[in-house]
Figure 1: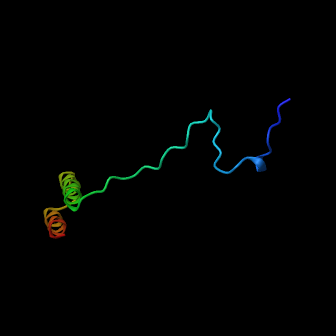
Figure 2: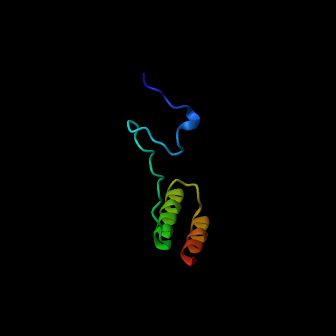
Figure 3: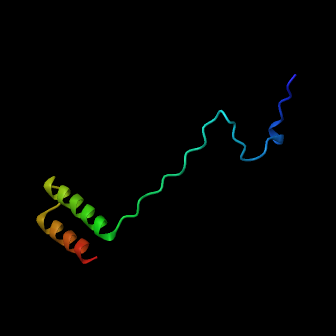
Length: 68
């Protein structure tokens, strides 16, 4: 007869060898300011192409992105 330990007797952090280890948390790759500015400009261009932004709004927001 095999004895099974109570929950309180199982050490914290114990992993059953038949279970896969928990996944590691995802680490976001650092984004350089240049990459971020390019991405913002792409999104801005998309909004202008969709007609969401006027030419004036586009020009103003583009200037803000490029000034940073």
